[in-house]
Amino acid sequence: MNTAGNLPEENNEKSLRRSPVGRHLPTSGGLSGTLEKAEAQGCEALQIFVSNPQGWAEAAPRPDAWEFRSGVRRLGISPVVVHAKYLINLAATDVSQYERSVRTLASEMLAAGALGAEIVVVHSGSHGNDTPENGEERLVRGLSDAREAAELGVEEAREAFGYGDLVPAEAVVENSCGAGTQLLSDLDSLSRVLRRADARCCLDTAHAFVAGHDISQPESAGEFAASVREKLEERVAVIHFNDARNELGSHRDGHARIGEGQVPVETWTEFLGGVRGVPVVMETPYDTPEVDAEQVGLAKKLAGGLRLERGRI
Ligand SMILES: [Zn+2]
Ligand SMILES: [Zn+2]
Image: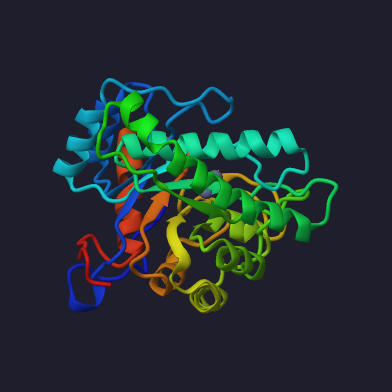
């Protein structure tokens, strides 16, 4: 893969980068292993799961939580993002599924807080055989119910997780591919729900592309970033920076490494240049440690340069 052409020059005045860049990393080797990988790959931001995303089992307290929080501070990683379980569907028509989703999201917000994470990304869910309007209604209510449940559970969680300063992480909704009856695959519905729920979002670039937003051309990528600014304003909490494996408008999920999917590598500067300051987290397939580190470095260059200017948005 040739990624050398047309990238912004590093370290000149124009190439100041304001977005911290990092990626999703596994926690299976223990949280200290996660931080070692983050450090080796040059991650300034990080995403993890706090429980098995494919099952309903709640996150358990981790003996290495304190060590993780201090490691994150030492490495200057911010934000730490948690991806919530895929099973959560706040737009579900079935009452017991809705309630389970609310309870589970609240529990993930608390478990994330126990690790010092600021953000929990939750999928927008599917409206099923009901109307999208009713689905959005439930999603808005679900976000508010989950926040309330997390607040109510905070004392208990402080004891269970042994962390007296625990605060629930903020739940942010992710845009979808628009597969089946998934909600929020376009900026208008995303904006509507965020305003009504007084919430922020995570914008996944691969989902946006397969949902029909053409970010593979410099001009349309710049226009997309401009609509994001116009319609979502300050409500984008994090970017999921993924290339798409599948075609524009295919509504089929599938992440590719940057430069290996549908979007020409240099086009990303148009999009990322339009959303400066928003943290960038990659969820691209794992490769060797060298390739993973290269991808993080590439994302930094595409987002404005290797050097990060923190707190100067
Ligand atoms: Zn996701
Ligand atoms: Zn994503």
